[in-house]
Length: 446
Image (cartoon, rainbow, N blue to C red):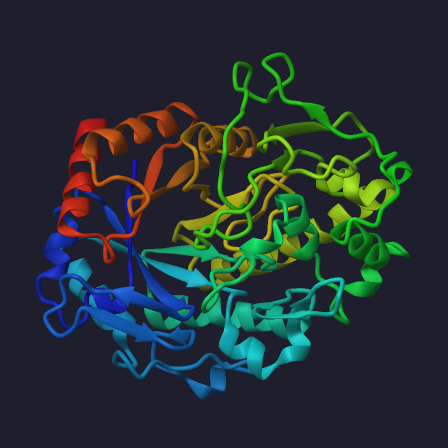
């Protein structure tokens, strides 16, 4: 088992005590951000500051201009240009493996500079933080990013986040979207991209169907598409699991603003022949879901299968090209994917409804209700190949309590569901009490 603690370069650079503190957690590896989006971070241990504003996404390795094409990542001004290398060396000196935490299509700096390459919803609204992988320039940027990180950064492993299109869900500056009372089906629909590279891939009238669904303009007769089966002990991928729980947005685990908790996870492989669909349904409170299209498939009607296949293919094509680049540049390092078995997923955890044999580890988001998280892990385990590991991305920050017993109990639940390693978020942001809870929870679980 390899347990991983996530940190930023600025958590380590300039703080000589950081490597031993992180090694003391009992983890074997650290996920160190090599490229990351903008944020405002607490730095509770750093001798020079307590809060760090990171105003734009940045690349934390030395820039080699000849390595880039149209899209060029920005360098930081709040850390040294080689912050990743400095932090990597300090962590390795403490006996830790260092994995390159690589955020791919989530980049507001590049999206703002190149609006033609960003996701646009059915109403034409751009998402500047979301680079759309339907554009060759975006795919090429991601390939060059992976190549540079492996060549210059020489990590012990590679973690790919946002390996597909970002969607509606996003923790933006002063986010003001919750009052619209959009359901998670609505956010799935608002996550569909209609940029110039995507719009013509969908069947005719898809844009009109999506807009009508969001605006509640669909007549009741438009939902003739047969919905999936409700997951029950008799038809579940892992018999005995059933779900009825609240959860947070499936589109972006870094978005802590709750959405309506009605959601579905579907198992149709893209392009597969029609067959009965298995659906995990997470019930919403009475009256919060629109009765005329409670699921994304129902909202899209007869268009659902083709639209779903297009969406999944965007992530699949990007993922396969990046794995090929990584295997060529560093054949022996483990590749970890932040993944979601839901084919409608968008965001940090890209859709993986048919699995990915080219990866070594599949990591599922475990930031919501533990029962729901466990079902997602089990599903991912069902999709894994022999020898492939499944990891749980465990939140150890608020609203989770700083309590070792509670965290250890969650780790046991996730292990029972199929997780063989834990990815702890976030060791740089956590208070001393929370670090202690992480350390004790790992000890108790062992």
